[in-house]
Amino acid sequence: MPDETTPPASWAGVCALYDRLRQLSRDAGLHSEWRALAAAARDGTDTLDGWSSLCAAIAEQGTWYGTYVIREPGPSARYTCPARHRCSRRAAATPSGHPPRCGLADRPMVARDDA
Image 1 (cartoon, rainbow, N blue to C red):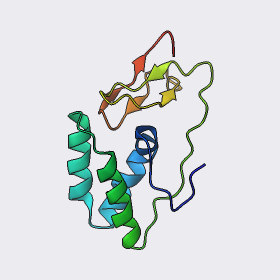
Image 2: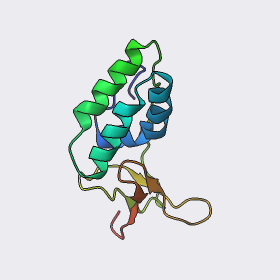
Image 3: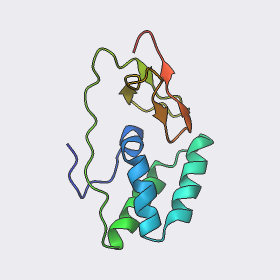
Image 4: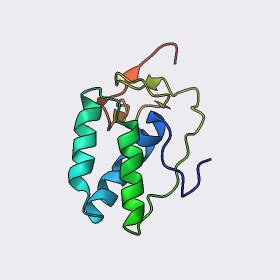
């Protein structure tokens, strides 16, 4: 498991921290950088290094973004990343039965029979 000094090293890690990074970037005065990275990621640009740089800039402001865990998906985790860069994240439907949402791609995750 990554510790509090480890920036996300994968798209699944960025996805897990996405909402937290949005708030922390606002708090640190770096929200324009977050918006630019989010827009580029939605367009399919490889922004993983940019997200790591944003995490470092947030940390320089004295706020750390915390830890994250990518858990092994259970048998109901049939949804996968809808983004072009295809991260390894898998998730189950929401409690109301809707597909989970990918913040990076800004759209619902995709149901896969083989997931």
